[in-house]
Structure formats: C-alpha cells, structure tokens
Image (cartoon, rainbow, N blue to C red; front, side, top):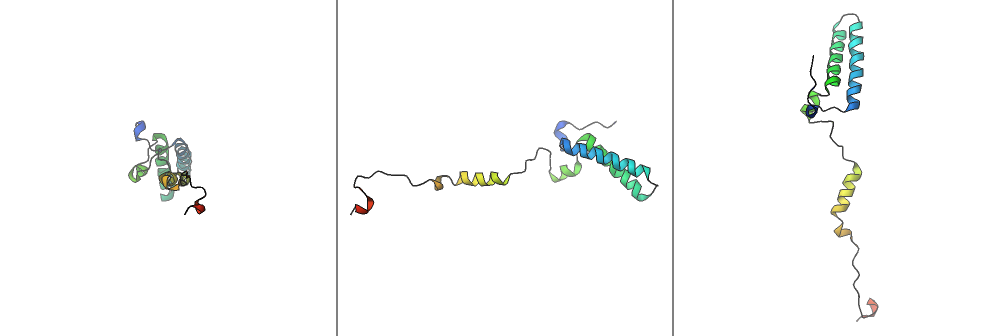
Length: 108
C-alpha cells in the first residue's frame, strides 16, 4: 500500500484533500462503469490520480509551482496598514510650541 508523505511534505489543505477524494472516487467509478474507450480510460486514470492526491495530501504540481497549504494570501488592508505605519512620522500633526508674545499675527 502507498505510504502517506510526512506532514512536512503535505501541501494540500483538508478541504482540498476531501474534494480531491470525492472527485477522484466519482471519476474513477464513472470511468470504470463506462464502455471501454480512450476517454473512459483517461477518466479512470485521472480519478485514480485525484484519489492518490487526496489520500496522500501532496500535489507534485503544487510543489513545482511553490504552492503550499500554509501559504497566506496577503489581505489588501495589510498593505494599506503597512504603508500607514511606514509613513506615520510624516503624518504626525505639527507639534505645538508655546510662545510668550501673544497671537502670532501680533508679533512683529
């Protein structure tokens, strides 16, 4: 029997694994139930690959593309918050400095 890859090698999330399992079983059974042809053979083979992908939790295509289950997609607000933090000193209001001459317009 095929052994599952170690947890570090898994690059599929739980939801994607379940979807792969369901789609793999459906495609495999449908491909095997049809009249023998190239299309039904390819459908059954694709179902088997999806089934293996779901059981093992590893996708070689994802590995080649550098995609993993733990990848975080940056939220647009994160970029805005980061820019606000970067420009914070420039966005400070001018500081108030006390003066003793009264109103600035009266100072000559």
